[in-house]
Amino acid sequence: MHYRWFDREEELTPPEKKPIKKPKYFSRAMITGMLLSLILIFLGMRRGDLPILFLAVAFLASGLRPLTNFLPETIGKFLSNLLFGFSVALFFGAIAMAFL
Image (tube, one colour):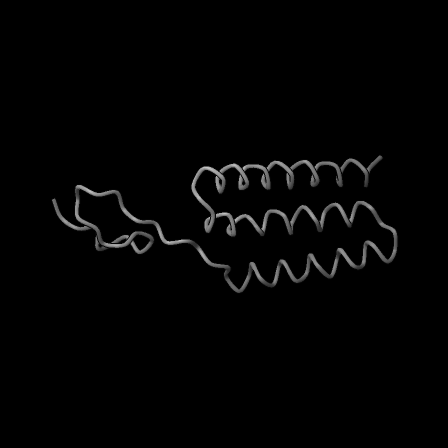
């Protein structure tokens, strides 16, 4: 067995142990997207536009999913799935509200 030196997401560990995954941090594009969604949230609240508000909250909720990597595994996975389902439901709700 040899070490997995080519995989940058996993630290070097002996072959008999599980690889340790590093938590992913926010990239510059993700931070920019979250700032834009915060601006859209305030715009939607000010103008009373619910579809834009729902869409912006959906993008913000999906952008906050990497924060669940810092929690214990079972709680983090549950909250990550919850945020994903919440953001998908809000996205489809915003599309339905915009066209109906």
